[in-house]
Amino acid sequence: MTRIENFKRALTEKRAVKVIAGINNFDSDSVKKVVASANQAGATAIDICADADIIKMTREMTDLPIFVSSVKPQELANAVELGADAIELGNFDALYAKGQSFSAQEVLDLTKQTLSLINKEDVFFCVTIPGSIDINEQISLARELESLGIDLIQTEGHFTNEEPSNGVRGLIERAELTLSNTMELVRNIDIPVMTATGINPTTAPLAFASGASAIGCGSCINKLSSEIGMIAVIKSLMEIAERNTSKVVELV
Image (spheres, rainbow, N blue to C red):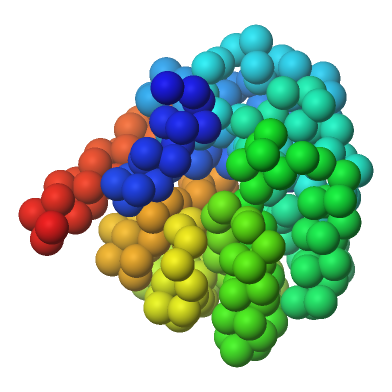
């Protein structure tokens, strides 16, 4: 079974955990630490930036499926040539703090441009739906992406300067929008949905309860200073995902 087939199986079983090093994380030492931790903890996949050297380094470090994220079609096409198992148009959430924003039409146009540069049969293609656009636009965009043969939709919240509440309430506030977006999209499309933004061991069960087939987790991991801490968090997320699989099996 190929690397991406393993990921697809985890999607089907609603237990996929993608560890996100960061679309703007070009620090090889930082990425190396995240990749090593994801590998050690048995994550389902790793998501990295579209830098050729980092892609090569990551491939040498792990046999985990590698997602390469960018908002530039040519970079995504190059990533396919460099051996990425999956490409992702996104993650936009990391770019909002820099003042960038993306409309539904822009995402659709970027997706079509990327498809024109690749052989779709060669790579798994995930697209992030901007969390900042109206939910009706999100649903319409997701349906159009599904019609184009996109394999996976990733939801997100959006950047805010507001300070969240303390404790568990703050963690849930951070994830509230992406969770509601997940619920809406799961009801309206047939392809799998991955929930990202504010997903951590506290909110991951809520993501799966919202219908997600996968979770994308970044800041709760890469903000940590030690690999031991990163491994512990990823293992916790994997345990939550495995428990979700058990619940799905019981329902079937």
